[in-house]
Length: 404
Image (cartoon, rainbow, N blue to C red):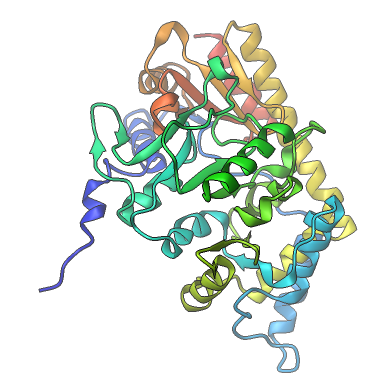
């Protein structure tokens, strides 16, 4: 008789955003006359840049001719895209990354889930708290998180590193020693960042403890402050302790086309074994794939026209973020984020529970956000709004919140 992976049975309920979608769908069905505005799920709304669309069309035409047709992509991704990534994302910041250290994929979310395969089940993970739930969920599915403690909404074998207003959202080194450390910067959901000297301390800590940092830089394009690094490899010694993940979803609007990459340096080793080799083996065997057409589109993001056009889109979302931050502050909310990331993190009014505030916003203002408790124990009492809506819907949502 076949058996299931019982670790899946430990997962609490459904995925956070699936729960939100079900609640919203039920509300809409019961209230078909209400216009609901979503500032919840972090999906972009602006269309792909013209330079990207042109590249897609050219690549489609190539696929229609025998001389230029492309089948399976190379395991690591096409060299033209990996070179563009290195030149623009790393070499331009004086960071030396080799061609075979870049692994192109169908998105950072996939890589976040897949990377756990190369680590032993008895590794102890540490996560900044609150943080993107995929990190913990992926490790739970592979049996690395222990048991779920329902009353505390946390896992018994996960080291949580609280990031709250009290510590300026900068995590302290944990009392227990982790093997794998997850850092998302700029952070989803808080929208907050680590300055270079703060991140350097984490790199030094990881090297000292022989731990590995999995660094999610999906929102680096939104960084506006000069003392916030765009890559962990801007810190000394990072190549011996860090894996970096990036995405084209938020900086170039690829949420519907799917493209990302992970950097695994060859200097990163465990007991003499290169993690680069392990990831290359895993990538080649179980890679979901990013088609030639999509990789050509990714290359176009780095063209002069692509850079200018995506910069305009980022500015559009950050204008929304600034408006949300400023108006909520004027309404009396305590607000964080919205400066280096398209996320606004606010304290719920009068100590209200995160999900209770979700219900109030949905039912009284017809606005959807994301309960902070869904991102970890320290997210209780907080709430996330995104700046990815249109300028018009964002303004309308704020009017409704003001009327509460």
